[in-house]
Image (cartoon, rainbow, N blue to C red; front, side):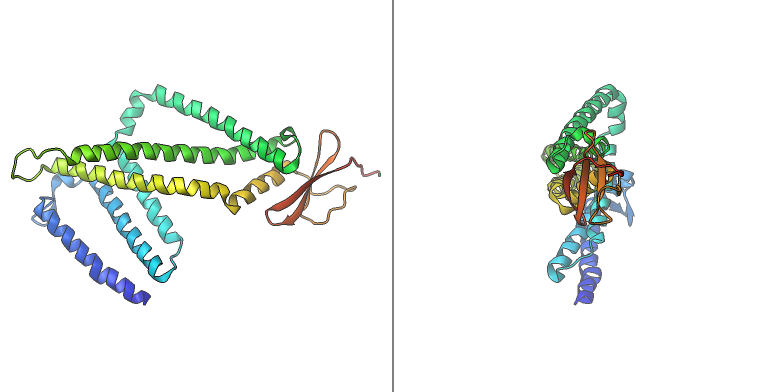
Length: 291
C-alpha cells in the first residue's frame, strides 16, 4: 500500500504538476526556447521555488500521515527547517535587511539591548518564583540554579520575540500582496512585465512562508512550555546547579541519586530522588560528621 502511494506521487501526481507548471510558465513568458527567462535567474526566484517545493512536500507528508497514520518526525522537521531557512533568507534579501541595519543600527541595537535587559529581568523573576515554589527556600540560596533557569526562560522569551517579528513581516507581506495583486496591467491586452510577475511571486511566497512559520512557532511555544520535557529540564537545572553535594556523612540517603546542599543557616537542603525528573525537596536539621 505504501509502495502504491509513492508510485502515484512520483510517477503520476508530480509529473502532472510539473507539466502544468511548465505549460503555464511558457504561456506567461517565464520560459522561452526551453530556458528560464534571464530576469528570473536570481537567488530570490530560486528561494521562491524552494518555498513552493516545501509546501508541496508538506502536503504529501500530510496525506501520507492521514492515510497511514504514521510519518517519521525527521521528515516534517526537515521540510519546516528548509522552509524557514528559505523564507528568512528571502525576507532578508527582499526587505534589504542589511541596508536597514546599516542605516538604523543605533535604533535596532538600542531596541535589542532594551529587550535583552527586560527579558533577563522577567526570566529571572520567573526563575526565582519557580525555585521558591518548588523548594520553599529563598532563591538567594540557589544563585547557579537561578542563572540556569533564567537562561532557559530567556530562550523562550527570544522565541516569542522572533515569532512576533514573523507575524509583523507576515502582515506587511500580506498587505503588499493585496496592493500588488490589484495593480493594473501597464498595457491592456499584453502580458504583465516579468519584473512585476517576479515581485508578485516573491511576495506571495513570503506571505505563505512567514504565515506558516508564525503559526507553527506560536502553537509550538506554549506546548513546549507546558511539556513534560520542560518540567524535567527545570528540575534537572535546579538539582544539578542548586544541590552540588552527593552525600554527607551525617545524612543517610535513600538513593544514590539524592542531592544535598548546606544552607546559609547551617541546615541541610535535600533533593530526594523519586523517579527520573521528579524530586522531593525538603530540609534536614544541622548536622556534622562528629555527631
